[in-house]
Structure formats: structure tokens, C-alpha cells
Image (cartoon, rainbow, N blue to C red; front, side, top):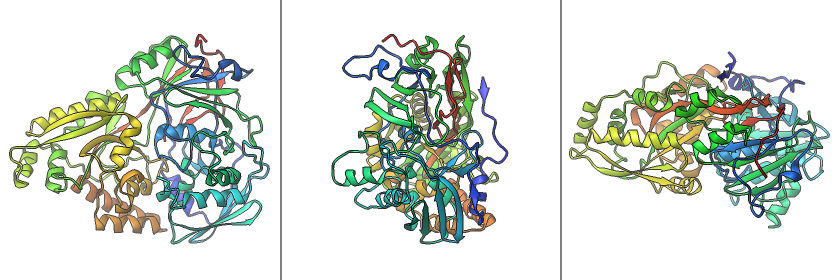
Length: 551
């Protein structure tokens, strides 16, 4: 099994980046934010529904990746979910980006940047960068992108990442000046989020005019190493090598994503040589994959939290004693040991040690079913109660988590009915507050506690922005507001420590586990990087054998 080697700088570079007042230049060897690969799929392909493999065939081959779930939106300003981010990060690029191996924050489309004062950054763009439509990237495209992101009519779910931006101005053709309403420590890391992907001004103008839909459009709106080709939603998506890419070109001709929700089928496709990469290897199957003759398991420490959200606005979960009782009734160590089989670790709170702002001295709420029953009695629920626990389909870890929680809660007289919901509907339902409890995940993509806690717990972020628990606490709001504005690193750490203490005490969710990212990679594939944020870096991928898809 291949293990990801964690850099000693991991989790610290994001905070350190804000302190840079001098010019920072993109290292020559820094990987690009969006790049992609080659080969095919898992099941027999219908001529009517699927893209022809022959159209994309070429010298570099086609990388075939089997995904457990399809994305929801290709638009950077669309739904903020990880499957969509896998696609978007290959099509669009951002001003800043992360090194896929060390997760160090580095310039992306910005060749260099300079902090002018506490609230102003200036970015100098690489010259000669072309969008997929052939137009050159200029400062006007950057301005148009953030104007659209901040447009209330667009209602972008990820607007919270950039809502502190007061203005974005084009100083000249390749220089952009960005000013925030207040000093905002995590700005550079937020600009590396896939929601900050720079979109062609022409595409944006067409979108406003109703001429295209960026979710299913012509695939010409980004600058990434791969160009959108065709998407059969729920089934497959193909991207082609961007032959006019401004940086180092990809080695492969195309990348083909095949959606295979069933775990055993996805693993079988890898074993049979029908795909090159299979994502989301369940812990119970990890050793099996590692034993394949033609593939290996790659396991990467991640920023991915699995949690059980509690809707704090509905009875009886609006009572903190009930939420505490639920938390105390769950043996998290046993849950993680039983489900993750050594490929994850129990979560004490919403962030882990890979994230700036994590406090290792914070204690979790603990496991105490007797105290849980006492709290239920204090809340007038000595006879227990019933509720519905939601989970999304085609995610065995979440399904197993729900079952174990159901079992453990039954021991304190609480009955949970389990309901499985399709992914897109699941996001809508939990985002609208139409839930009691639900199993979900959150990836602190930016490596900074602001993203890991502001979006999940600030009262301004209720719903699709991240706070699906609809949690409201004025003290937490104030601490999070202070932390994102503080320029002193130690001050930010102290503020985030206080927030973590409150969140453990108030229990707006069950913090269950930090999962490792497990993927199966064929031996015929080299230089495939699984990034800790859940996305793929395909910039250096090479293939020695095509996938035998049989079409």
C-alpha cells in the first residue's frame, strides 16, 4: 500500500502566507491547479448515452477514473460539493493553488502577488494564458468572475468564501487589485478554493444573456489543463487535453470519469483492468484492493470530516441537553474502529491537526450513556423519543455510521428511523432544513480553520453555505468574526481554541471521524496524485496500458 508522506509544513503554510508583505513568485516547478488524464470505463457503453472512446483516443491514451458519485455542477459558482470539485478543478484554475503533495499554498494563475496593506492584495497574472475558447486571460476576466460570484441574483452557495471582498479592480491588462472590507487572514487560501476558478468574461456575459448554461455548456469557460467534452449526467463525463495549455501540457489525451456507485462493481472494474483508478475505496475493501495483481491501494491523510448533523432548530434538538445526550451516547472510538478498520481516526471536533487553528488540547465530549440518560430526563424525555436519521445513497461508510448510531442510541431509549436519499436531493433537503439528523461530510479545502468552522457554524451560513445544522450562537459568531480578521497568528489560534471548546460543549453535530482518502490505482498508471482535499492532480500522469472497456 502506498501512503501519502505528510509535509512538516502541512497546515502551517496557509497562515504563514498571509504574513507575506513582499512579492511572491510562482516557483517553476509548482504544479498547476487543474490538470487531467486518460482511458475508459467500467460497464458496457450504450451508443446513445455515452461518449465514443474513439473520438478521444490518442498517443497519450485516456485515463479512466471510476467515481462513486457524479458531480452536481461544473459551474465554479454552483453547488459546493466534493464530486463537483473533482471535475471543476481540472477545467478551471484559480489565482492561488495548493501543491498536490505538500498542500503548500502557491501562486496559480497569478504569477506573483503583493500585499499592499492590511486589506489590499495585488495580483500579477501570467501572460499568454488562453481560455478554452481561445481568448487570452486578462484582469477583466478576474473582475467579471468575482462580480458574478458576489452577485445576489446568482446566489452562489460558496459566496461565503468571498463575501468579505469589497472590490476587485483591473489596474491594467494583467494586474488585479483586490480589497477586502476588513483584514481577512485566510484570503489567499480562499482564493485557492475551486469556487474561485476564473471564468471567461465572454462566457459570463453569455450566461447573463441566457445564451449558455455553465453547468452543461460548451466547455470553453476555463483555462485548465483539460477541456470539457461531454457529460451524460449520472453516468459519465469526458474531458480532453487542452492542446493550447499555457503551462506544461498533460501527458494523456483525455480523462474519462465513469460513475459506478456500487463498491464491489467499482473494485471489480479496477481488478479486471476496465478502469485505471477507482475512488472511495471502502475500508472493508482496502486490503482486498491492495492484493490485486494489477493495482495498488493509495491511502492519503485527509481534511475530510464525517459528521452527523443535528438540526438545532427543530424539537427536541433545539435543547442543548438533548444534543449532549445524543453525543454522550455514541462510542466514537468503537464506531471508528468498526467502520474504518485503521484507515481513519476519531474526531474530537470539526478540524484535525492538518488544519491551521486546530487545538490538540481540546477534549472531546466523551462516551457516557448513563449521563446521556440523565440529560434526557432533565429535558423531560425520560421515555426517549423518535426521529429520522438521513443518509445519502451509495455511501457505505455513511450508511454504516447511521446503523451504528441507531444501535447505540437505542440503548438510551432513543429510536432512529433510517432514510436513504439520492445525493442531489440529499443536499437540497438538508440545505433547506428539512431534516432532523443526517450523516454528511465536510472537507476543509483551504487548510484553514475559517473554512472548517465559519461555514459550518456561523449563523450567517445557514443552509447550503455549510451550516446545515442551522446552529446559532452569538458568542461563536463573534469569535469566528474576530479570528478571520486577526492578523496575528497566535491571536487567531487562541480564538479558534475557544470556538472548539464551545462546539464540543454545545454539540451541534456529532464529530465522528477524519477519514483517509483511499483509491485504487492500476500499476499501469504513474504520477497520479490524490490531493488531501479530495481532488485529483493529473498534471504528470502517464499510462503504459489502456483500460479494456470493451467498446
